[in-house]
Image (cartoon, rainbow, N blue to C red; front, side, top):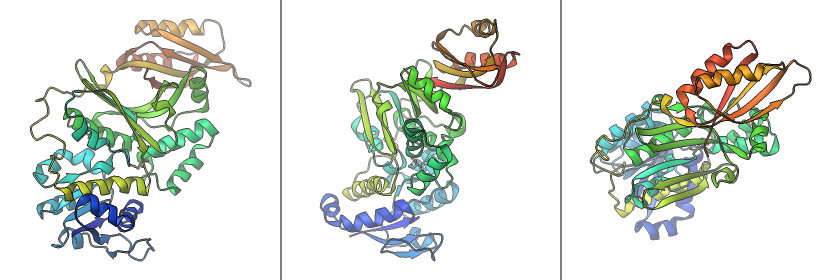
Length: 421
Ligand code: HSE
């Protein structure tokens, strides 16, 4: 019999305990051994929980318990779980974690500490989708050309409701929290940080890149307006918060931001809490992974898959390789060197010569306009000017925006969104 201890019995922890009990037969048949939860750790012992396990508020009751074989870490946070996971590994216990923030900061140290002890994290990225397994096992023959996808269920749920039903941002965020999708601090979701943690984990598996969230371009969904949504619809795009890892000539681009993507693409059709990740390998071509990106049972499904894998004796190294992947060939491409298409939204005077001034500024940076729309404003002398560019370098669009803001005919902030074709 294998005994589990759970650090953090919240939505996911309770689902893990309940599924292990409800589906015990099928899980035992697949793992080859009976798996039971011995105990769980919570912060507040007086809160009612829908679980049938022994609870304590001292994490060392699990981490130092000689009877526990596998520690499941579902606490959230970074430094406290790092300390506990390290201790559990030092005590010779296998660890399963769903904690993407922990891995975004400490995955390489943890791989070192774990050595041959299993440390698994399928649930950390894209909820119930087996994307870690795909990169660690299924695609090992390939050089990975790109990884692109919707990696945060909360924001996809919000964008879908805002775009398709005109729902209000605050109300829909509250709904996502009530459904158990959002992080304890939902700014991690809406600000793109949660997706960046997942992207960094995938980039480690694919490219061996040791970057931290602070090193990469991260933008959230907070500034998307109904004007952007309407423009996207008129011009055949959907807006999705994407995590993008792309091998380019001089390195690997890593970025998370709201993105306009062709409405006809598969990822554009992924709505609600669902996540989808496309991985392109040099030999296999494009592969797609789709499923619930958040929620208790979907995430617990991935946690239990890891537990079963450990019980079966899987000893694959944590990041899928022991030796540094392809030497140090992969460098993180600096943000300013990213090349893509852009959408800009600005308020300008409704006067002759304004367009000429704007296109003149863009010409200074060799930026060419692809499409343009001017929306009259009824009660104001300003109009909204929306346009997309042909592909250009991030450095140039940022510099052009600085110059455009200085023009007398441009008012307020200029909003920008990147486009992936
Ligand atoms: N808050 C996360 C999301 C949970 O919405 O995707 C799953 O990691």
